[in-house]
Each structure stands twice: as C-alpha cells, then as structure tokens.
Image (cartoon, rainbow, N blue to C red; front, side, top):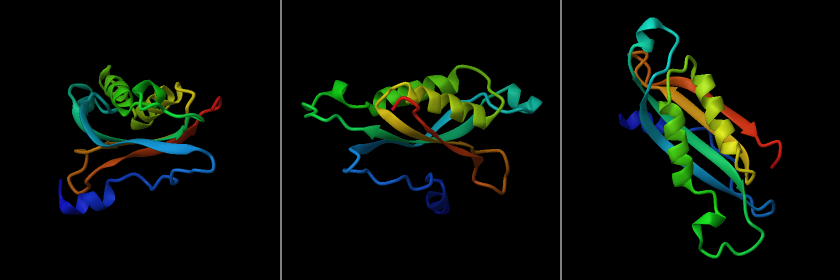
Length: 141
C-alpha cells in the first residue's frame, strides 16, 4: 500500500463515542479479501481484491461489563460474519455486499448504527480503489 493510500482509504470519520448516550464504537479497518464481485463477464469468472471497513455504534450496557466477552459486541464475531458474507458466492454490486454486511451487523440489537465501506482495489490502474460507503440504523435499537 502506498503512503498516499493511508491518507485516503479510511472511512469517513464516525461520530465520537458518546458518554451521554452510552455509545461506543466497534470497528474493523482495512480488511482485504478476495471476493467474487462485479457485473462484467470478466468479473464473474474469478476473484478480485476488496477492502472492507466497518464502524458500529454500539449501545453500552447500563451495568458493569464484568470483563466478560459475552457482555460486548465482539469484533472477532463481527469479522468472522463479514468474511463469511464476502466469500459466500458471487454478488454483482458492491452496494449489495455493503447492505448485506450492514444487515448482519444490525441483527444485534445493541448495534445502533452500521457504517460499511466496500472498495474494489484493482479495477482502474489510475485509481487506488472504487466503491461505496453506506450507513444504516437499527430500527429496533
């Protein structure tokens, strides 16, 4: 990755963790996978590199966490779910993959907001990446 790319690859800055509303942020940065994605014939016959970034606004527990993993939204669980979604089969649009990832993250009622960025890395020789960033809210959170 070029030094320049570090300046431009991070997702938009998410709202800060919010003590008043008891929000924290769980994130995954710069996860690079090989996925079957794209609408063109040449994209349907193989894998291409994508980069995923997530920021989840998570409602904190009112009580003590007890230093126990089951009392938080575990980033490893999130990461494993995202990997599975990205690798489960061909998808035409980065937008579709982003929506599926956001939906999966919002299944946990503690997740209030999911910001998902999906980038295709090797599409144009003169661009580091192309893609989409979406933000979705939990209607039940």
